[in-house]
Image 1 (tube, rainbow, N blue to C red):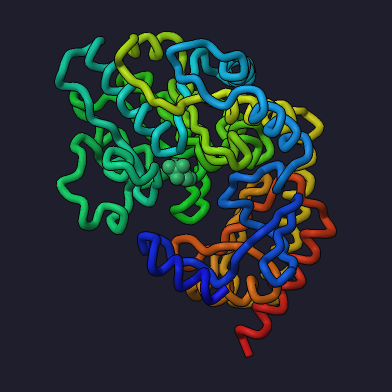
Image 2 (cartoon, rainbow, N blue to C red):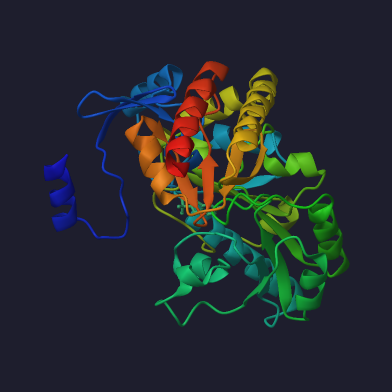
Length: 396
Ligand SMILES: *Cc1c(COP(=O)(O)O)cnc(C)c1O
């Protein structure tokens, strides 16, 4: 452990605050470190490994594809890429898909598409995008500029222009911010990094109506909440509203790097040969695995179970809250759950890790629970026992 920590410090950029553990193996909801110690993983690589670690079916597809064809470039056709796109459009509002390698790149593509579409239609002046305070859209220059958090901006000014931030959940604030330069509204249907913040009832519908009234594009960033996380394939399905553009990444490849921007035909037509590209976008290796992951996650019986297990988890956490005054609120949908504390959560995260439970803390005081979607009630009981112990020790 210590040699890895030192070598990391010597050789890798210091951009991450890492916890003191070296993981070497994963299986389902479990991880093991170098000493053989077992952990329950309720973070899933930050909502990435939705089907758990080393899912045997995905491993089989991955090995077969690795042995067949890994990459050729988008100068040619490959079947897995086209099949994944066809499945995504069949299962969503969208007609077209652009493949990227990450969430930031998917959002970057969405921002470019919104600008291009709007300029083609309305002329050069209309390129402003309204986004939300406490949002998170990525770390590239445009997506960090779109992110409504000062700490993400700091040191990288001048930012990319044309982004306006308003309070999440306030329709009035959006309407007030609209000018004749506005072309789109970009929003996470549920804010992830910002603290697991849910939309008020009807908020996203009203947002859609507002966009229609002012001829703006509605962009949903489902990078974290998509792919079954909230009990439906996409989080916005539960809101009775569809966007014009949606971005996906995190769980799309169950751990292989892939992102996607999806859009309606009308909007997608603004991109023509030469408008946008990326070397690795949609390689046969990642798309074959993502296609199988999508097939598994989108099965109605699989999605139904997420709600059931998520409900069980929520009730267990509420029971914890009734006994621990340190817990201010538990909020969740499906297996996207946040537990807001009265105190900073970093220490609790460390103590959970020590006892073999992997979680993390966002927005200083919110513990985030995003376990693999295959988690069972028995594993939830085990996690609750550890949390109970850690909370009890903390109040002593
Ligand atoms: C993680 C995340 C991103 C950025 O994705 P990367 O793959 O890290 O670039 C963008 N939007 C949301 C909502 C995210 O949670």
